[in-house]
Image 1 (tube, helix red, strand yellow):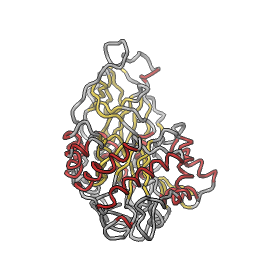
Image 2: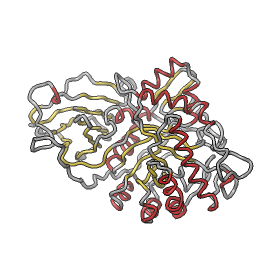
Image 3: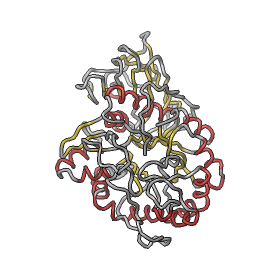
Image 4: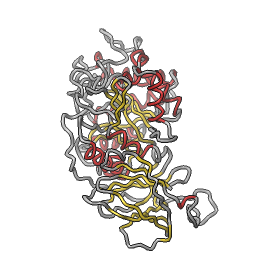
Length: 483
């Protein structure tokens, strides 16, 4: 799952604007995409602000200060939001619901678990509206022990012994409670390894998929998607191997770019199509220092026809490489599927780094989602496999029924609650130290997420359609503005 080090907090991040795709007609009769702002303090001239500062008492705090658009006259630094510049649609923001996360949630008291799941997945009140989850297909290294859905002592090429039984203990009960709160949450599945009898080394750790089992492994994905559907869980997309260039985790498996292209072209793509499944296939699912990997897959025309896009992590590389891949294949999507916070960590630099590089950086570089790793761990960073991550800090720490909210909880909250699935990224400039990204929701509301990366407080204007609202953010603070 991870490399054994944390990214430098000062890593520079090229936040590329990309090219605007233009804005087509939305069916309204007005000559502009939206009607002008009405006068007065009512309606969309009022701006809501949710704020996180370096002060522990102000974390995801709804400001009571009145913020209203007025005629733009000041000479302040200004962020201009432009709904006529449109970029990618958004699928959601969230976490990996690891087996360990599900175990900790499932072992809570029913009342306490229900309250926490509502806080995480509902959108009312102070709930944070998590809208996307990643699951491990089989175990990840943040399960108590490694497993797949076909762990047999002898090869089972017909998958006669395939069973989702390991997920029925904790994962599926918790997932069904989540789906009762948000039935439309998008779910991505990613395997850490194939069954050991399919692998060149017969081990959960490392090794590669034997060519003679490519067809059987493709059917493994079919059975997984169909089996989850039978449980009431729709798998929106799959990646074919978590971190395919890292064979040292427990579990893990190496899969080169040419192997993945072959596997998609000859096996997984045709198998999903033959089964009538419209689950997306997403390539790669590893670090941004190797954009050549997804580009190799996408350059294979026969494989590419089955591929929706590419997924990335940022333990190495630069977030701008997402734009490199997008620009090479603009009809293919890009996704950001994993980033840890190393425990015990430090709230302010961790929060700031993730806001700048992921919530703002990934979406400004065309990502349709942002997923943090992982949803929950206990006070000792468990459960994890022997050889798995020993200091992965969950978005929440669960100690019995006690819950501590950590940096990834707040980074996702600043986006997920307000930038709902189906939103579109829109234009905004990057003045001074005000890193930011803007969106338009399906209901027409605009969302601007701003991080002050400077060392002093910054007063600035938000300009929108010849109106402006003046606001300020302390050094290191992040604000989500909604109107």
